[in-house]
Amino acid sequence: MNGAIAKEAEFESLHKEYLPMVKQLCLGYVKGDRQRAEDLTQEVYINIWNGLDKFRRDASYKTWIYRIAVNTCLLHLRHSAKQKPVSELQEIHDGMPEPVDRNEDSYKFLYTAIGELPHLERLIMMMLLDELSYEEIGTITGISAVHLRVKIHRIKKKMRQLIKQE
Amino acid sequence: MQDLIDTWKKGKEALSTNSSAEALITLAKQKKRSVLYAQYGNVLVLTISLVGLTLFFIFVAPFQTLLSHIGMGMMLGGLALRIGIEIASIVKSGAIQLSSDATEATKAAFLFYHFRKRVHGHVTIAIAGVYAVGFYFLTPEFSQYISFQWMVLMHLSFLLGGAFLIWVIKKGIKKEMGDLVQLTSVRNEITAEGGNHAGQMQ
Image 1 (cartoon, each protein chain N blue to C red):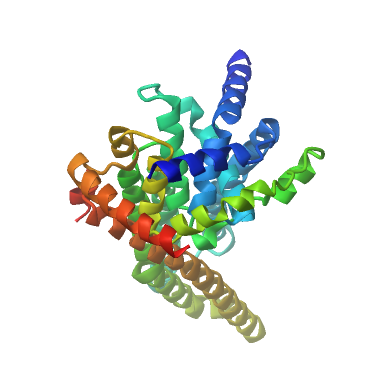
Image 2 (tube, each protein chain N blue to C red):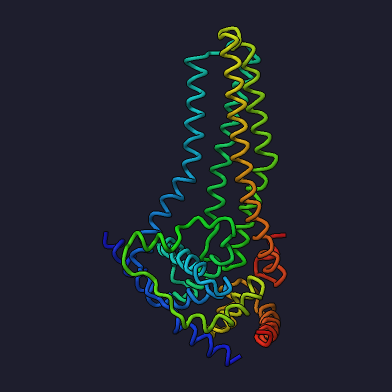
């Protein structure tokens, strides 16, 4: 019983600390589509909850959550969106409707530009913007250091062009 | 690049983040239950069918001829094989570890969908074929004990059941093959960039 309470407390703490990071990653992955980002964020946190028992602490919480978030995004397949939409989630626990923050739209150009990149590049770009080290990005993606350097160089170049177009 | 990083930081600060962790925990528990029901539900239904059919052949309709025995074996064997495939499918889907790196996770997912593709293709057609032929092997002996009208009814219900099953399977194939196409493009992107486990895929 104590284990279950400890797990819930750990999850709540991870939710509080990393929600902006996860949400922004999801938002960039779905080109700024707020509703899809909410669904994806929800899916990431469900996967975090399901994986919490197996977390071996051989990586930091941040790297572990990043891995789950990146994999959830990559495997978020078009036809398999069977999870309950956010609206339903809110119905279950009435109260706390998600307010629409108009400021989010001010950054839509950035999410749209990121969304123009291929799937993995999108995620790598966002990890760069979140100032993760090359080593951390390599650990999360499983891409070797040499290839990662080349890839990041290409992504930055593409991103500059996309921002100019925006 | 620094400008973009600064904009990114501001964007993060502007995000509304007041969703409830408690609600997510409840939803995660519900979802886990429904996934388990869906996965083991198939195995359970097939196992009940297998046991029911076996009991039917033992206690209700103990067939005597060699052709009927072959038919029984084909029907029961087809069902047993299908149960085995469903269990293998659960094991393979369990190999997708979201906490592993992206190269490894997408590789496991790719292998799972490839397995499903094989299962949905020749294997399912072969099992359905063996099951149907097995059923028709029973009919000569069956016709000795039941009237013509009941035989017609039995064949019609078998055909209708078969048609429904094909529709369900086709729907499943269409969905999973769509997923496989998308996953293949993600995999190609990763393997082209020298993922640490990319070589093992080829």
